[in-house]
Picture 1 (cartoon, rainbow, N blue to C red):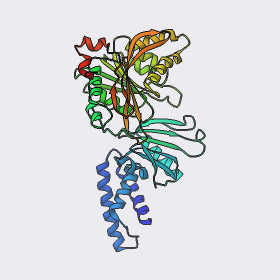
Picture 2 (picture 1 turned 180 degrees about the vertical axis):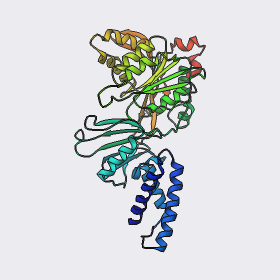
Picture 3 (picture 1 turned 180 degrees about the horizontal axis):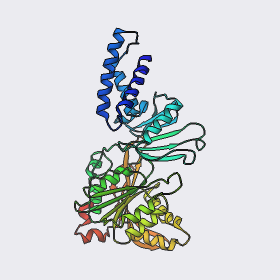
Picture 4 (picture 1 turned 90 degrees about the vertical axis):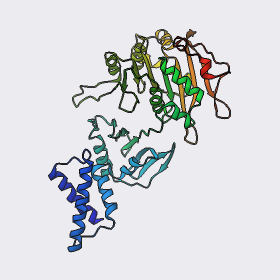
Length: 408
């Protein structure tokens, strides 16, 4: 290990002298590490320097340390790892296929701090006692969340959620067993005809993946504007502009919240507005935008499709005392057309549990809804025989709902 530390020190000095940015110049780093390792081995054979036990493994380790994120880099490189998190320097967990497991990685407190600092380097976001939480995107699109003491009890809590695009279109979800052919045809037609879709589910249920797949059905001539807290969406759309929120600066100024982004998006000639997730008062701005004839989609955390609608009727009330439920509920009824609820089963498989169609009528403060697809007792996503098939948007586009869902 002494040999590796000596070589690491020499490489850091070379990086400083040659003014190399390791993360932005990975190929230069690989060449530098290879040349430095060869030179070190030559000197070790002739002098008193300790020999390297495994030069190729040493080169990989040094590249991860200097150009990557150190001991955590293998988790980022492993395509089977969906997410990993640190509860403590010696408690590093990862999730594969929806199941968590304890890894053998052990860091020091200083390594955790240094790694987080490196992760935040390209994001422009900061972490200190005044802002003990941070959300940021890593260069590969993974999402980073960190919380530090005294918010946490003792150790830094670090979570990295990777976006592994195993599905890019609705057909991919059909092949993966998340959707049936009938449900995919219906959702494709719903997006093509401009229906507004709400995707609901718990954390890691596949909401973002579903949103990306739905976006693949957007017409090629449509302009899409996306707004997110941090960049996560990777839409297969040609004409798209993505915007993310911004933290306040050290003086407390310059913050750009999601509500501001929704308003700015309306000035950018969108045909579609896609909001990564609604959590708070930005839901009101989204409803106002969708009520102006703009087509859109978004995600929301909820336990079921009906709970998602109920939550969407409640969140706009956070915008101020002048916002009443008598305004919000009818607006939700006229804005939202379809709710797609995603879930993850005990085996970690992600699938669509329910597809709910939303009517425009409200009785006693309750929105009229109809479950079009649902999971039966055998776990199959089937058409609900009692579902309402009144869908004016599809009819206006010459689409027969019976052609999509088949003979019931």
